[in-house]
Image 1 (tube, rainbow, N blue to C red):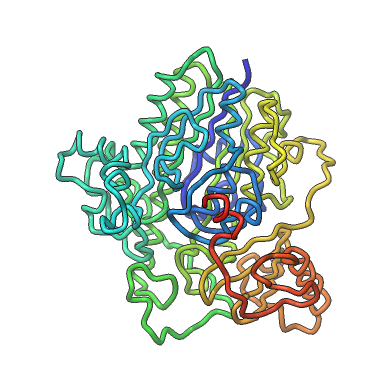
Image 2 (spheres, rainbow, N blue to C red):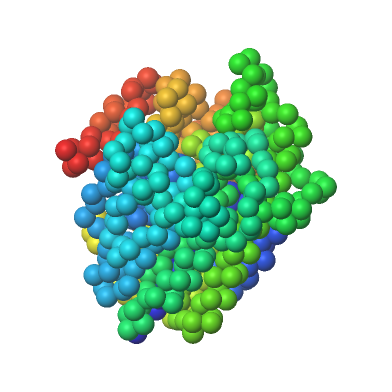
Length: 489
């Protein structure tokens, strides 16, 4: 029988929040062990750092130009011909997703045989004036029904008072730990292992909503970080120091000067949520052993995007800086079939679109021609000589902060399309992006090289960002490209 596949994703986890990569504070023992016995891709990025487009890349293996989601927009239907779970299902796999999908319609299977859904707080299905009855949160969310069965019909996921995008406010989880969405995702994943068809290999996607806000870890995990000196966020020489609108007072702020005690508390809660997830991953790995499939199951762990966490006085995601755009990625193969080099760190630049071809390749399932990504398995072998891409192109439609970036994990070039501002970072010498080299005469040739790469990427794009020679400032960005809207009518 073919190998089973367990894809574990988290929402909004930074690439550097792993103990084995040298983080001085965070505790991630189960992920550390997966890395110790697997391969870590240390230059893994999300091309479009927010939930919807990032998940399109994971599910389809396509670049953002081809899956069509180059920004964040809800309620645009998902009608892709080829998806990762769909290809696994065609190949005879029993497929299941537990947790966050963030697709539309909300319960779109996207090729899975079944989903047990908890997307978190979705604004479009919380506004009853904007959604039909079958789209309402209390009709589409499986976790909420489960919670009410166990804790009482009056309960809701907003009872603790934290907004789903609260970036600077934290508090402990208010119910028993077993009722937390993180525990629920593993409880339901274990139940799938019990109910699955044992005559088929399985593809299980366990998709956690945390450490995305609300920052609500169980008290025991928050206590781990109580009184510990936490990292000071890096502040680049290009970062704004003023806060004229006092955005730092907004609990869901994306920038500004935040009360220092609140900043530290929210950072501690963020770390605590990651350690809580790590703990529950350990529970899930134990379940694989107990069901007798631990040596037959390939595991891939990643996140859809990161969290700026106060870097450069910025919060949340969407922006192209390392805290937001760089994600963890670990591939672990207990079967031994992939010949991975245990404990290897790969610095070739990879992207979320590479997940689908990697997992299909790992199980000898045909990779559709629609896939733009590449299998990263050969990069993780002991004697890899694989020719690889030179860089990746990322972007996000984001009003006046709309941008494009290109990076190879060693250098990063950023162009803000509405203002023309350019940034250039030497990520090897300056991994925290403290110094913008775009105005340095010594870096003029480097800047031009990376700008030309972006021009090549954008040539022919419908927004008109370039004439093929120069970048054109002020073109109207859009969250979804026209071919996507045309395909859904």
